[in-house]
Image (cartoon, rainbow, N blue to C red; front, top):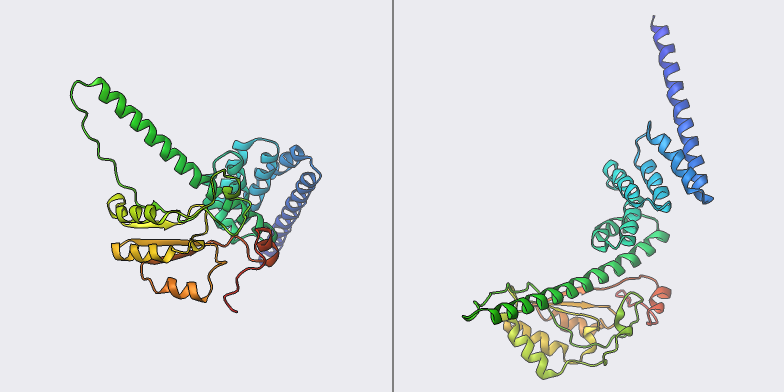
Length: 306
């Protein structure tokens, strides 16, 4: 009897091995269809396997075929199923992120692309990081535009209501923003492909000293928690009076969030930055090679080891 049980187990193991080999063969066939541009056959082949094999890679491959066929709803569901089975599947994260960007859902794509950036190979990582940067800029620009539009709509509504009333309109207390933006200069020494700075028609200039001081002195009353972001489209360190403004922020109890492209972080500037306890330094580095750094108009990436 023990020998018969062993033989039964051996037969079962052989059966499982055969099924696995057959499944692997079908996957390869599906991928070959995909490689040669026959996306519908790739999808048909892979969906048959999904009836019996539920793996993260298979769902990702099938969803990619669905996306290429233009069936975006099915593709999104497939990528999400792949991530439900394995949240660390970088390929599925990247693919879903790209799909959402194509559907004009950049805000949803950002966390997926950020996750994928650390989990795909170097060749894909460069493209993922570039797309992530473009999405971040798009979302930021849209948020500013939406806020401005909402404010204009609100102002129009209040003006209409006030004209219609026979008594003075009640003043509405709008919530204070958590963060103020301060663009000390519109000049930049780089030309990143995702930044609209080079395409804007406005004149490149530094903010006037009088305007800067007036704004910063009013900031504690304007913002709810005393935070100012020193960056919009220009490189803050190009303004020769930047540290005068940061020193004023320190006196006013304002935290200065300084975003720089690192090209001007020489020893002198670093010492001045670290002498101010109210500075929170953010390094905006979108590439790590001299060649791609040069594409952005700067000869060489700054080496802090030098």
